[in-house]
Length: 110
Image (cartoon, rainbow, N blue to C red; front, side, top):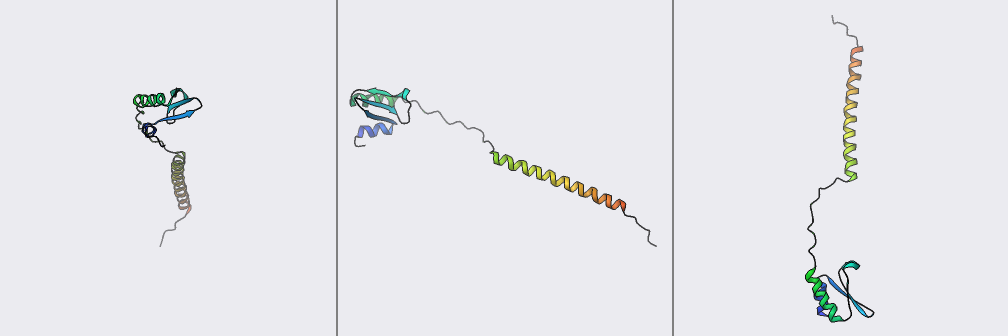
């Protein structure tokens, strides 16, 4: 950009695009509904500064709650499932020991 006027408008987020027979003025990344057209460069610059003055403020970002990722959910599920399996295995082992102990016969020592 050699033109200082275009550089100032670009700093405000307004771009002027030259088309055959007209100039298109729009916000950077703007949609076709926000575009304005002018026949001369002077009109385009005037429209650009007017658009820069009227540019709405961007919406403030809202804090949204963080969501656990699917991977974190799966890991948490597997950790809980593994802990339950560990408890079940310990209970089965205790039952087996009780059964084995009950089947033993003790002879009184003389």
